Amino acid sequence: MTKLPFLKPAPWADMAPQLVDVATGRKPADLVVRAGKWVNVYSGEIIPDTDIAISGGRFAYCGPDASHCIGPDTTVISANGKYLVPGLCDAHMHVESGMVTVTEFCRAVIPHGTTSMFIDPHEIANVLGMDGVRLMHDEAMAMPINVHVQMPSCVPSAPGLENAAASLGPDDIKEAMTWPNIIGLGEVMDFPGVAANTPRMTGEVAATMNANKTVGGHYASPVLDKNFHGYVAGGPADDHEGTRKEDAMARVRQGMRAMLRLGSAWYDVEAQVKAITEDGLDPRNFILCTDDSHSGTLVNDGHMNRVVRHAIDCGVAPVTAIQMATLNTAQHFGLERELGSIAPGRLADFLIVDDLEKLTIDEVYGRGVKLSDTSGMAIDLPIYDYPETTKNTVNMKRDLHPSDFAVAAPKGKESPVRARVIGVVENQAPTIAQERELPVRDGKVELLHDVCHIALVERHRATGNVVNAFVEGFGYNKPCAMASTVAHDSHHMIVVGTSKKDMALAANRLREVGGGVCFFAESEEKALIEMPIAGLMSDENSKIVAQKADKLVAAMAKCGCTLNNAYMQHSLLALVVIPELRISDIGLVDVRTFEKVDLFV
Image (cartoon, rainbow, N blue to C red; front, side, top):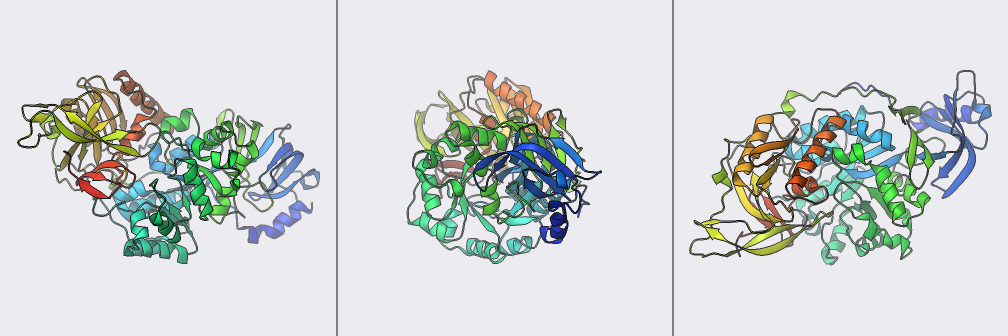
């Protein structure tokens, strides 16, 4: 295991005598913060004129006067009447969606007040299997904040409907539950498998529950029928796939935690939080998360601070919104006595905040150490080197040609032909299964209006397989194409474009650089984000990656794409566990029925 540059404090049980001595004044604290407004997530109060004392990376005293905790070597700072807020927790997220490594993700989000993350590395698991998960697990343990790992549950996400580079099962889950930083099972996307009691799903859930760890949920269907009730009975303890108020209410009523997400392209908080603001449901079982945020969002807009601000803007009381991003999360994962509050014994993760509603953060502390202030990062995060075995994973049989993306019309069919088309929904993960009449020329189907070509290029076993279909909603009005080896969840290569020539250029460019995202327009490269680690993550600094992401967004906009964070929409077009219509390496999949369907009606 990689040597940890940042040591985690000793367990509370071992440190209790030391904390007692500091709290009673028999020993001095390491750090005392004076004159703050204590945001108490247990009582729901904001308590003025509060001091906090920290020893060995944990809170020892929280009260009106910590002068008895101050010794000659104690560092004393004043909060100057500003708010003392618990460090923010992201309850469900994928580091790989940030386009960077765990280290660079932490570098990007620490200044925004995130001190705990619960990550599900099922992207790298689909490419590198258990070895990839272990690499991210070990890197997470080397961070100065709390990065807990959920063991990926669905690799591949939908057996029989896609082929990933790896396959994991109950025995793998059982082994992972013995690793020191595994907090539970990642989102169980195979919800039909849980409802049907398939051996893989029942075995994985049982291995997690027997280890007394949390089972993450993913019920991506608006139909709350007997299969939903079967899914809940099967063991998943939370769900982040709701998009409506009734989704959140149904989950909480069944004893689940409703995770409300605001990612780069998923805007699901506003509708669901009405269960609290309008219907008066108890907010204790509602949790905020991001799920997927790319580097541009992280660097430019924020992370969990952005989600909390949004919840407040949607009518949630500030302290309640903070509870939903701190204490509620800690309680859900069984870490209430470690994280999520400013209270004795807990890890000293806290923020000094000037404006509570705007959540303007002046300083960030993790384990009692200043990590960031208004001037930027106060500590240095060493580069975490990934081995060469994680690279060169774009295994294409050959360079592609424009003809590889041509779609032959059905024999005997005259123009126009009726085709199934994937419809993109802005700011939501689900798609719409649409049908469109498309013209035929020289035996090949042509595009019309906003319809684009979409192709999935197999990139794990060099089979040379290319699956072609159609997608609508990107708004491109020029010859262009985007290719990405980030293609949830099996992570082949997705290419979307209006020009078959540009599609071939983009695909071949990613083969050349070892993966990532690139955009071509009128036969010229306009943007490129190299992601050599599993074809999913860059090995560059998060700010550099964010700049490249901004360039990508600008290039897409110049070609008519006005979708918010269209790259994120692009990356999910092969996710065959979220309705309604997706593309995979076996063809077009109707996720409402979990069946392969013909391209033409």
